[in-house]
Length: 397
Image (tube, rainbow, N blue to C red; front, top):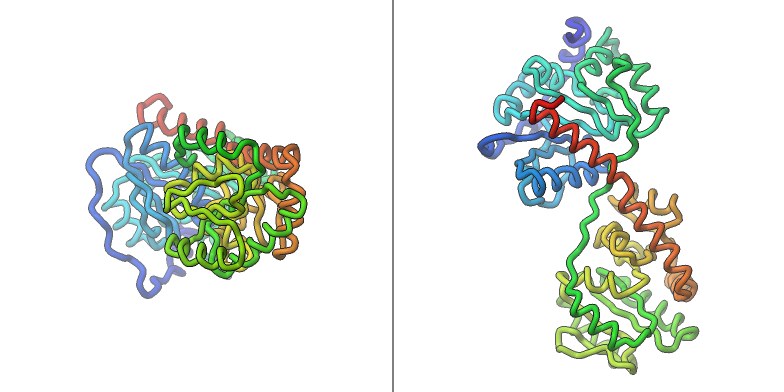
């Protein structure tokens, strides 16, 4: 199906980079699905899909991406193969995937040609625009058309993306506009009995949560809290340092500065006179997001980006405050910002002002509702992709 001349010219331009072609772990027995995310912005939705395949179908999944990824149970994380005939054959000989699912629109002609020759069903999801893996000066006659023709389905994010794939040569019957897949949004656990007891103890006190705060931001968070206390004197700050070892020295420092402090690690409670409640157990993030209607994401004001995913707070209905440094989660913050689902701040003063504004329950609720909608957006698209994969696996497609 591939254009011999176009593919030959493309393959001639491929060069193995130093360090490419790393050793691979053993393939698990039985069925295996291969998911590929070509860039950082597409890792999250592919991880969300991989998680469901593992948890709901009990299938091992191979997930490849050119960036480092945190571990995911049941998922084999690997770099993608070099897009050359030799590496494509070695990769597919080793993994023998039952289905290959590519995200975005980045085309790997050598890999896709080899997968097509082996009759491995291929799907393209979250499709935005077709493009070759490595753009070089040159002409590859018929190559894009032949690569796109190998896909059983191309699921575009919108009509403009669908037109780009049709223009690139995809079969009209294979292109459909389905929308964007959901992001990976883990609903963190939280003990309901603990939440109920703390809610009763707080007796409707206004509360905010500073999540995963780096040491450099501690002063800014406390400045914002002091400023907000001028308008809401009963306000409680729940403060989780990024490094749990900071909880004790931070508590000592705050008490020396005159703050009324309680430490959860010492089994102390946020009694009515307590102004700062220091918590240090990462397993309890879900509890604090559920308890606090407003959360500031540490690492975004003076760090390199959030120390926790914004989707964690979004999924649990806590309104999000964040600084300008969004790091690798920039695309996620972009979506949240476009939906008016977060409040961005530039300084400690801004943080205090924004916090004071969001202490009005209706304003925090609007922000939290918008964030929840973004967190759950795309669930139907992911569900539809799962349905297609299951139909292929069980011979219904």
